[in-house]
Image (cartoon, rainbow, N blue to C red; front, side):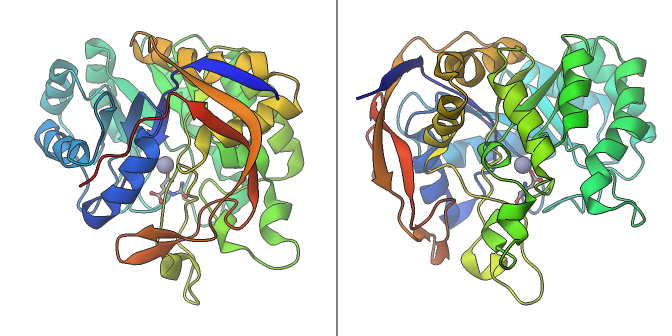
Length: 351
Ligand code: NCD
Ligand code: ZN
């Protein structure tokens, strides 16, 4: 049987939600990830260190020992330089997340005029806090499939030029343009790549009928973009690393006649799904860098010292998972996943 051992991986972009949903999301994320960067798009959002500390404590209440949530703070039009300083001194809030207002799930409190935030970016640059970006424009006139490339042209280029020492992460990239921009940028600029953008393209979502399970933002693009992302992920370029963007929504919110909530759930099988992608590219030897090293290096954390093992041993994914009092349809639900984590998984915490 094929098998691979990795330093314990980290997930640098995850949505854990809150309250009754934490039981599912934290247990799945904590199965074998060391650190996870927790996205702040709750309602109301996690805008300062005190809110982040309280949220982190709620997460830790469901977490086994050794699991480390680190927190992204939500940038709003009101974020001040003082909040940036507090984040830099906190020890657990390494990044601010920029959501252009209206770009995605729970982004209504996001930033309306990015240039007006430049003084805050200045403070982030000075205090070495990371700017993590949902890179899509929101203009009604721009086609949904072009919104990431338009953001790079109109905004990201400007931010990177104005703040050359600011560490910037373009989150969950979905296009050839994004992969190229990051590959050509300085080592201050990096990108996370999700498992679902590596495994699927817009045909998977649209051919034979719209499939809500695949609807996420930024939206799945055509296959040439998927191929560019796969190429970037397996390339060994240290600017690309693992961020699942696992983003659960209850089944009724996704399979809804009045609009489908954006977000794909992959935390139940995250490293296993990435392993499929790397295996298909004959690049399993590069999975450790992508999953366990480059993200930690960019964030300035040491590599995890223990390991996990994956065996090529297919398993069946349940069609639906319990999610508070709701149901959650996981990616690959009712189908199989080729790789299985056989050591390094943590025992579940009973709550
Ligand atoms: C995310 C969510 O549901 O919170 N949705 C998504 O489609 N990716 C938000 C985000 O990361 O854009
Ligand atoms: Zn996200």
